[in-house]
Image (cartoon, rainbow, N blue to C red; front, top):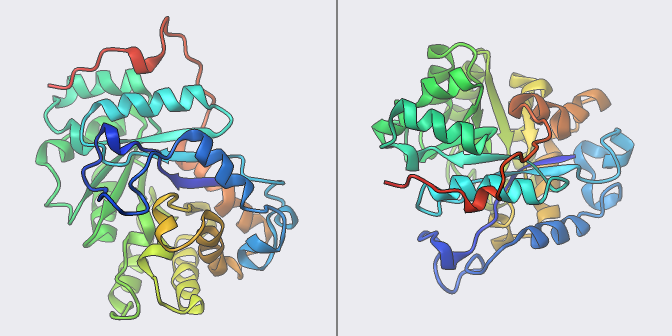
Length: 309
């Protein structure tokens, strides 16, 4: 299995969004991530994704690894740190997604140089909406397309149509939507508009859906209703364009990494073993272009200079 959405951070190094006193206000390291994997009880009853344990589904005896996603540290140097963590923990971190917002003032040439040096599998653009993100960051999307780097979107409004438009404008670009497109909590909102946006967006090639963030965003909603959201997304996009992620350690405010993955997996019940394998690992390998990285630098990437002007 590949957990497609995890974070590592140290509040002492930035991350102004993490409030003192919250369960997130501590350092989460690669060792913590590895330890959280032991709690998944993979192949057992606790992770019956889609009605079958991971071992029974053919996905393997345990998580193959994770995709490390930027955590809004607040500076461009986080992109260098992410690659360094990947190089230091190759069996645990299979790929990484950098922060596109912080690159807004680089321009195409300097941004291409950053991509060459940090070699991300994706770059994430986040904000309230597409128009609320930095214009200079949005202008770099064509560079991602030319370099074969995925655009990942974490938008709190109209993420799905924004993804469809970006993919249509840049043929060949992979666009990955975080957290099912951030639908509103079903306890207070209707999912009708979201369902229609899913149907429309799924028609656009190159757009992928990440099943993640549900334990936090759908807190208080009955699990069967959350499962129906997942099932709808998978039915429209197909398992070859869906992947699963825990959003650890964000999820810890509401439950464990295992609980987060289990909730996401409840909507996979209609899939056969082949479809389940795609959602649990195969789609991530294709969308992120996962290949082992070799560090040919003379010194660790973390020590490399960063143009952070």
